[in-house]
Length: 443
Image 1: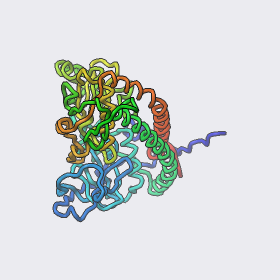
Image 2: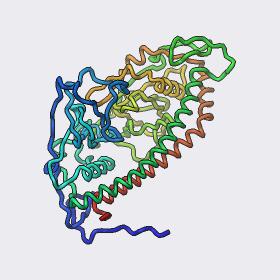
Image 3: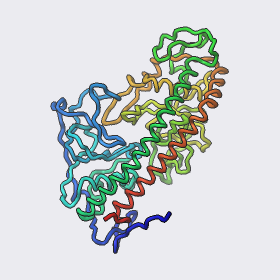
Image 4: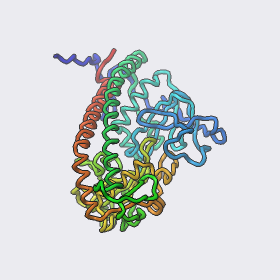
């Protein structure tokens, strides 16, 4: 079957933006300051009159205040009002934020840490703009503008950023084409995600049973006194989480690469592999600069447990753990996580399995506080208050081996689904990129 040739515009001209290259000759480039205007309407004591909104991978959504998921601040008085068709930008922590832009279909309120803007230029449509901004976000095109440790995009730099502007007729055609094309891809992605959720649920059931009931189906059991654990083998001993670890060390983001400090790999939350409860194997880890003394003090060792302490989302609160088991040269880890070094009487992989069960049971929720749109885990209180039951080191090792065997097929199936999603997302990004930048003509 022949592939239908891509339609191109008759002529092109330089855009003036290196990564963008050429654009159709009749398109113009406009800075965002000529397109958008900033809004800063703080709700104050009117907060009860507004729905609470969140910026997610699925766009701007309403939070359910009656049956809340996640943590809410003590007061919403510092939140800002949002009207339908307002654009919401998260212009900080860009490397860690799953989605940094959204177009709100709702009236509501959102954290004052975000920028809320409305379109002021009739030459553009909201539909075209959101597709272009999604492309910018996915490709991290604002990266050259980042400043400081929190990867903040300064507002003046943001408003000076130039984007291409097609005619209104072309914009309408682009939006119609992309609505149809992306809907099909999104449906396929949703099917793969549904399968992942089912496989993960099955995997977690296997893990939960192993780390709370052990391997011997005939073992004498006792009541643990902990609701999410239930009965445990009689010989397992209770222990607070903090006694499982010999030390805790907070992460550090370091500085941009320079010649005055030593450059080191810095592992991030984005490098977590929740499928295997370890880190992703990559060739493009983030490189940051640290003093040699800090590297020696904080670098990761095989068997260290990393816990996510800041960030999170509505469906994925902070508190997830992974095991460091990569062969890297003295890697560091970002300030969004904390390193927990295990004591000699526990198997680190077993602890990560155990922590995943504690996480899936929702034990972390009471220890999360939300400020400026970011979740923060009170690790000290979590480790000091929560009790678990631990078998002997030998049984821990046996459980680890059993779980490796029993979850292998599930892990392979989950990985296959993720690969399919990655291919679909890549295809979606390519389609959006080609159309909104004028590389492909759809009218």
